[in-house]
Length: 176
Image 1 (spheres, rainbow, N blue to C red):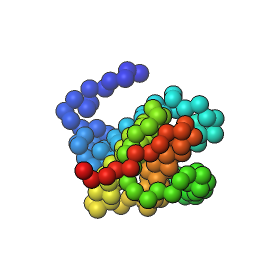
Image 2 (cartoon, rainbow, N blue to C red):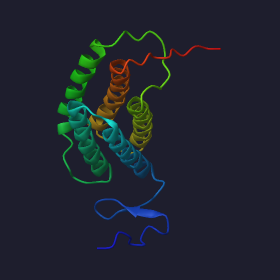
Image 3 (cartoon, rainbow, N blue to C red):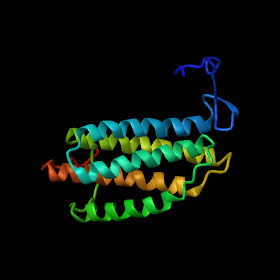
């Protein structure tokens, strides 16, 4: 099977089931950002040296494939996202409990791992915004929205945690 079909050369793509939509359709933008986030998490994985974090992020990548497939019209079940969201909340609470309290905005900087996680958080938030925009026109399961919202929180807290464990001092944002 060839990787190219030439069917998208005129600016359309196919959803599961064969429906053709423009490549700038909100649905395509949303799962495109999910795909971008997944690729970025692959970079994060290449930098991590923590088996537990790697396993958790690898599972997130699998979850993102489920979400992308769901948004593309697949009948794949998204029920596991509810449990995965709860797992993320537990991890967030555990990591956050080890961090100094956050009282101000901080700059997204630090170790290479953490900066990629901050970048991934920003992409997750864009994906969430695109999903919300799509949900104003079409039905989108709330499990997906809730998962993405929690994922951006997880990525933020993990970035802070890795910086903290590396001895990086957070830079508080201050107006000039």
